[in-house]
Length: 157
Image 1: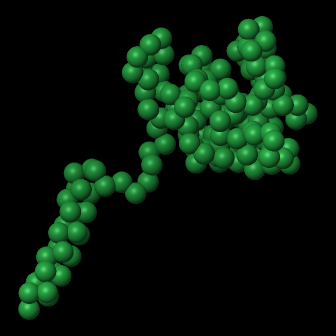
Image 2 (image 1 turned 180 degrees about the horizontal axis):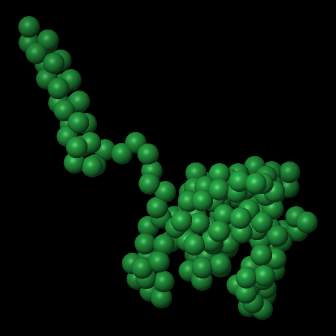
Image 3 (image 1 turned 60 degrees about the vertical axis):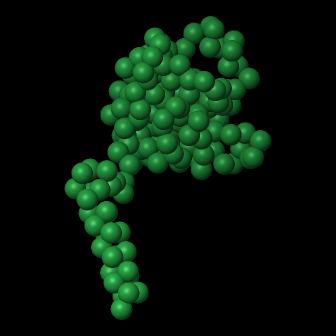
């Protein structure tokens, strides 16, 4: 009899805890696709490009950072009528033909967003040449970036 009571108590506590957490808003099964906000420095109050995940769509990035999904699609050389559904992780798949020695992926999207928005990014990632072209067209590229990042620009034209 005691083991049955214990079993019922465990079930009630487990599911009761989940139900209570759900009611209080702590239980989430999906991410919100909202990047964290930078809390200090010159970019204080702005969304953090380092928080972009591979599952973020270009529409998620547009909503968070104000860069149109069509601009992102052009930067990463996606030809589509619906750039909103492209995910940051799709960049890696698109450029997988470059081999294991050249990495273009979510980190490249983070760096592009960082340069485009002017929010600092702590690492240096490869950028496709198409992204540099888009940054130049939008006045976001300068001689300093050219000098610092010339070894990280991958010709994909």
